[in-house]
Image (tube, rainbow, N blue to C red):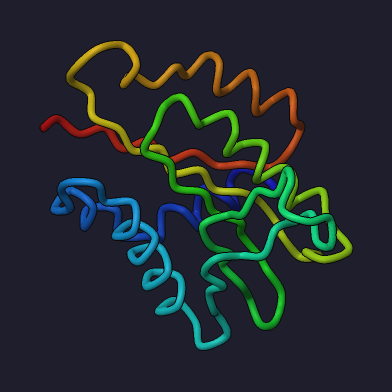
Length: 152
């Protein structure tokens, strides 16, 4: 999957809608992504509350993605939406786990991490792009980032 193809898919979403979402908009963004995906094609569907990529291993160590955007009966994009800067790397791990499980999740082309945070306040609210980028590169997975920064 090349970056141009991934970028074009992401650009098809009407991201301006998010500028009118306030408060903890985690669920709203998941709904937005789901709606945008489904309206693109009658062959598209969404699996909300995706089962863990560690199927059959109990709850220990399980990570569940927020949603899977599907084409036909196959997952196509694994999505994580995160509002806490401190959890960005964990979400990259989650995406990598889904992409790595080709037995249960064959068809995932890339991961999407939507990073939402407020820009005022202390540094704990600031994106650390260098660390996020280096960590994603170390995982060697196809992943797209959408960063949404808002002030209160």
